[in-house]
Length: 148
Image (cartoon, rainbow, N blue to C red):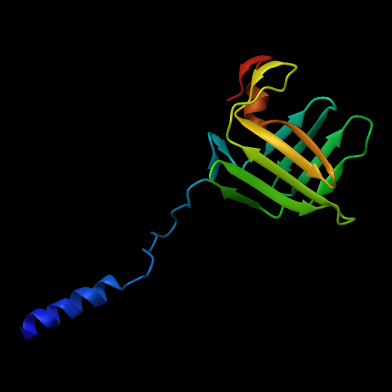
């Protein structure tokens, strides 16, 4: 009987080990992705009516619009929840600046392109909607079809 109690204690204590497995030296963490888009790589979100785009880069979030000076907010990193990623930041004057990307096919309404992500940009009280893809995929894309 004592042997069974002792064995039970050993098994119970072994089950309490909450240490994380050790990663081999030099092993990279998996890439953070939303659909097929790597979130650590440069991404461009864009929209029409009004025309705008925001470049998401390691150095910052840059909003560009026609006939306006670019607005830049620091890139404080992103957060992923399910099929949604968002970057929350602020402009130098503390105006909130938030980019939200959703892993869903998107049409910009003007071209014949299908983008892998839908996008929403909130700057202060203004909300702009559009589509997004990696800058690399946009560079390879034709005027029609999927942006991959």
